[in-house]
Structure formats: structure tokens, C-alpha cells
Image (cartoon, rainbow, N blue to C red; front, side, top):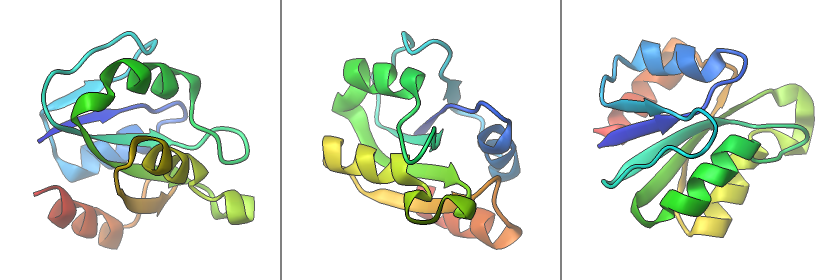
Length: 116
């Protein structure tokens, strides 16, 4: 399955690299497109918000979205990984995994199993 991702600080990009996946699309300005099933990996913006470019991408490409993996910081408390909850609710897909920053080795192994 294709992996689509957005990374501002490098945490999500680092997670993608740790996963060793190669069938990826990095969202640029949100006008990218995908015509096959995919999982989106995103960071959380602000206080639990979906990043602008991810929101724009999903508005045009939600038909094949199968799930979301989200990165965030536990220092935001209840807003930790809030973007994943918003996307899951808005697009009726599962929030597959929430990860602190770029994830631990244990997180990476669990995500590998999920995306098989």
C-alpha cells in the first residue's frame, strides 16, 4: 500500500525512513494526487490541528484513504496527535497509530506490522 506523508520538523520523515518503505509520496503544497489505496502519515499542527497541506491534500484525495498514522508531542496533553483523530473522524478511517515525535524502535515494529 502506498504511504503518503507530510513532515515539517523531520520527525515524520525520520519515521518513514526507519520503516524502510519506498512506495511513498511526500506532500508538498497539498496539490499532489494519488489514485491508489494509501495510508497517510502526518504531524499534528498547533494544538491538535491538521496541517494545512495535509488538509488540502485530503480534500482532493480522500477516496482511497485507508487510515492515518500521526506524530505529535505528549507535552500537548489531550491534544497529543489530535490531527489523527480529526482525520479519522472527518474521513471515517481508523487512526492506526499515534507516535511521539519520530517514534521508538518498538513503535516502528508495531507500525510495520500494521501496514503490511
